[in-house]
Amino acid sequence: PWVIVGHSERRHGLGKTNEIVAAKAKMAVQCGLRPIVCVGETLEEREAGRTSDVVLSQLNAVLDVIGAEALASGALAYEPVWAIGTGKTATPQQAEVVHAALRDSVESRDPRAAEALRILYGGSVKPSNAKELFACNDIDGGLIGGASGSLFGATGSANFLSRSTAIASTIFFCATLALTFGGQTVRKAPAAGGVLSTVVEQKAPVTTPATEKSSEPTN
Image (cartoon, rainbow, N blue to C red; front, side):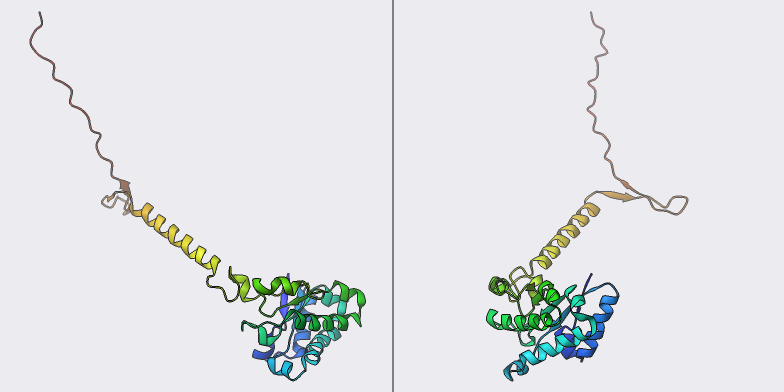
């Protein structure tokens, strides 16, 4: 089983510090879970030129607690906070620079773990940019959010699965009503036990009157 720790909404919305995220990653490993550790910078931190400092401090806090080998049993995800749910995305070149820095940091501790580690990109991946992003050397896949539930991506016009489920449910409901009320039923008076029974009304069979035979004697 996999578990996400350090997601940007938890870090920035609920104040989860690097130390708390590291403790959660450790607990996940101890419980037999495979952690996906998220790191990423805000727009203000990127504009201030602090991207590397921020993401490496987030990564090293986890490595100090669980080690590179345990991290490699799970995954690392780079999710620039400014590109989540905004429609913006880091260019493949911007993402690759950060991914390479993350892998180099792990490699300095354990080269084998760095080679095995999956580093995912999680900043508004969608069909229009996935191919170019995943072609980068150090981007091993994507941590997909909104685009995973839509046929056309995060900015698409229809959630195909939700619409299909609604249509199927409507058809089933209508079919159930038709089966329930389509037959003619009559109610009998309560039986001895007080239970009402329902029976299907059956029409009496239609018979053709027999032709009357002549009573006159025949010669």
